[in-house]
Image 1 (tube, rainbow, N blue to C red):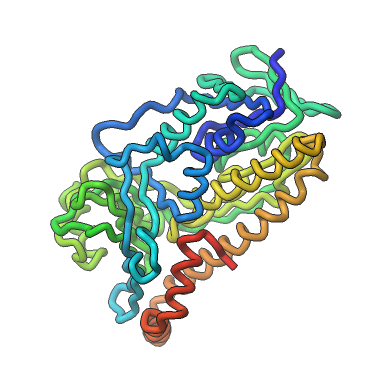
Image 2 (cartoon, helix red, strand yellow; image 1 turned 135 degrees about the vertical axis):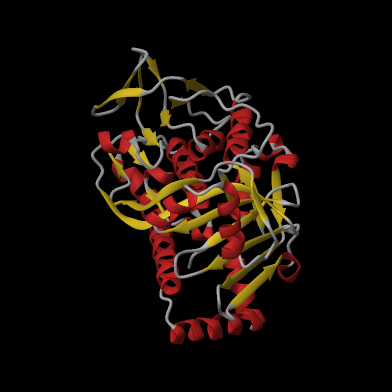
Length: 394
């Protein structure tokens, strides 16, 4: 049996980032993932992308992952344009007005995983175990044991759930979950537009849901995230591509001219999940295993990276103090810290979603007055933008 100080279940962006944050430390870490090791992305852009804020950028630089990035696969966006359909409500942000070089980055999830994986291949204290999945969790007084589907048992004082929204480890640990259906599906696709995006992230709100165009490295390519009621999402994704393209351009107010979808649009169900307990003896949650939120502000992965950063800091402090990493009483401060921001973000996303879902003329007028007012009040607008790009919710 192989023994470690820490086992991370899940080799997605957040699981890999925790391992990278612990690379070259004195902790012996195993990362277990049922998939294959990430490979360098090439060819067409994936329709699964993330919008990274400055806090995530800084974290990735600090853990040494950003040195493995491919500049041709990510976009620094310098402006944001937000408006409501059939309304005078609008607000815009730009990096020059905030004294920064950019507002954030749009990056393919697969590229981010590859950069993190490359960082880990140079860490002598990290053992990467791809192509195997845990089958059984056993928790003892001082250790937890995982039996892998390869037949190999491994153990550690703490096992971290970084295995996503449908976390196997969370279920095995019987950590309770609160959830509700957003009654929305997100249509994702890569789109070519007639007009260049000018390094701008766009979002339009309508009663049916928000539509975002996220800029890709090619000035005429964007990744879209279009949140709609399930029946409407199914109808649109069933259309011939030329009909879908017309509907998309119309929903986007023809802001970038005609649209051409480059891959088949995919509709993904959206669910809010929040683990009521993030830890128990020998198990702790982070990222989507602990929470999922509506993608309308693109904050899901940013919350996950803040989980990983906070947990790494906490674990290194416990290790330096020669304390048991897996005792719940030692994990509670991490849990309290991250729960506070996550609850605030969930509430904010739900509030925005509900605010724009009411297609009532007086409310649209009030929203228009409010958004235009903020757009013209430089101090308040600057404060909101800085909170967003730094990943702060309160």
